[in-house]
Each structure stands twice: as structure tokens, then as C-alpha cells.
Image 1 (cartoon, rainbow, N blue to C red):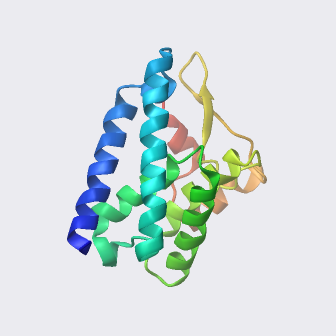
Image 2 (cartoon, rainbow, N blue to C red; image 1 turned 45 degrees about the horizontal axis):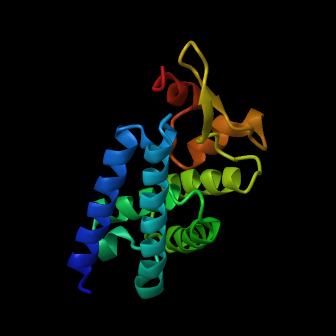
Length: 167
């Protein structure tokens, strides 16, 4: 497969993911909608795993910025495939260390993976739910007093600004 075709495939998968997420499939009251979301994210997780076999982490210098972001979204949403998330995290860590990917995306994927493992997150990027007033309820953080400092270190806005976007 050419890199252009790979980039096109990644962006198409992310577009399908976005369409289903925007329709509320992941949190639908309809079991059929939830099942459709799970099928989609599992299929995408499986394919991302194959892509990582073939190309490693799809960095922007390899597939373009849009396709690299698409790969990151697919890894984020592989919630029921911890093996895929862990592998993506490891490869993304290597890409960041080599200066080929961003620390911000790594922070979000690290938190997502930690939460899916039942552990405390680091950067406060993952939300467990939303209160009646619209404010998000973050998953527990390992060092809540340092969240803004840690976020700043990877280019993420302060937690209060992040939370305000949800309201």
C-alpha cells in the first residue's frame, strides 16, 4: 500500500469514527447504536494494529498531519482493545522521543490508556461524566495538585480552561 493510500484510509476511518461519535453512538441509550460503535472502533483498532505492523506509528512526516491525527483518534477510541492502545502508546512515545510526533497527543493517549487500565490519569484529559450543570467530572488524577503544571509541559491548556469548553 502506498503512503498516500494509507493516509487516505486513516482519514476515512477517522471521518467514520467522527460521524458515529457526533451521532452519540458511543453513549446511546439504544443497544444497537452502542453495538454499532463497538463494531466500528474494534474494526478500526484491528486495522490500526495492522498498520502499526506495516509502518510503525503513522507520523505526520510519513502520512501527513491529517492522517497522523486520524491514527491518534483511532488509538484513543480503541478502548476495548488495550493491547492496541498500549502498542500505539509505546510507538507514539518513540515517535515523540525522536521528534516525529507531539507530546500533547501522547499525553491524551497516555491518560486514556491509564483510565482504561483502571489507573489514575496524569494530565486530567479524560472525563468520567458530566454533572447536571454541564461541568465535566474528570477521572481521578495521580497528582491533582500538579495537573496544570504537567499539562503546560506538554502544551495542553490549564484544566479550568479545558473544563470550560464542556459547559
